[in-house]
Amino acid sequence: MSLRTVLMLVAVAHLGFGAFALFAPEKVAPIVDLQIDTDAGPGEIRAVYGGSMCAMGVIVLLGARKKTSDVWLLAAGLGYAGLTVGRAVSLYVDGAHMWTVIFGAVEATLTVLFAYGARKLRAAQHA
Image (cartoon, rainbow, N blue to C red; front, side, top):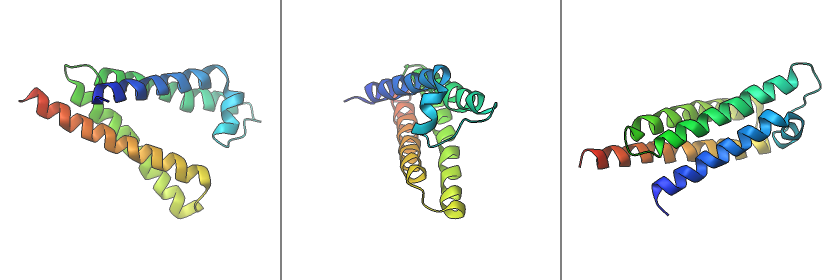
């Protein structure tokens, strides 16, 4: 499977989950082990899991293009690196909760994928 195909699949997954979170926060909350029993709860799910995931999906789609794709993948990688650092701090401070470990592993993997993709595409652009 080509790098661009993998990126497209990752982008579609982000857009799909983001749209799901935007329009059904009450169904997303249990998936990410959160409670939305406050007035702000649904809005936070919509913003953080909906809006952010949709934005990341668009960034990855832009990274799957041919021109300037390495810059977009670098941006996606930096975003996921930040999430990975947050998960690492949570593991240290809060302990090893199952979802923290699972989401942290996914985020770390995506960080590496996007960094690898940016490097590979940059090399191809300059070849």
